[in-house]
Image (cartoon, rainbow, N blue to C red; front, side, top):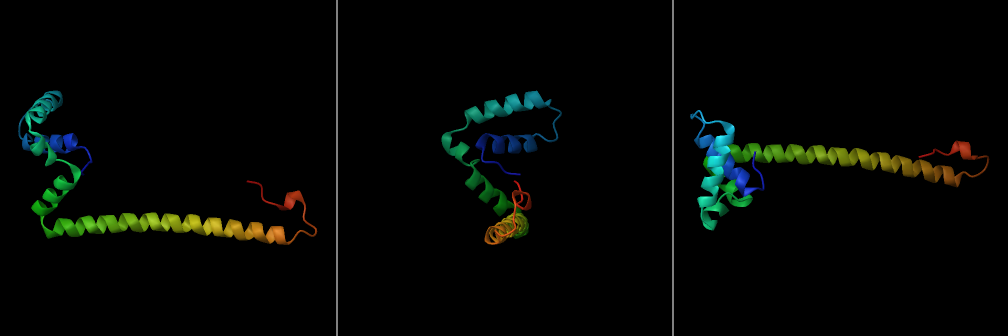
Length: 115
């Protein structure tokens, strides 16, 4: 997972580089913090979202791009489905309220849906 935080992207890479070492988590974070502070602004910029994501995808190859596109498409599809169901509910409630307003004869307050 990638984040917008350059520091967290750096920490992920640092932790992966130290994966075989038996370093306690707090010590690893302290070491990573010191290493981050020692980087130049240009080196830090490599861990910013756009550059970092581009580098990781290039490193992983075309299959990673396909997986990423597939995940984003599925996520978008889910969001659109949710929006569609909300729009459908809104449309039905709007149509119902219009039909009750149009039929004012023999209607009482008890006939109208209360929110």
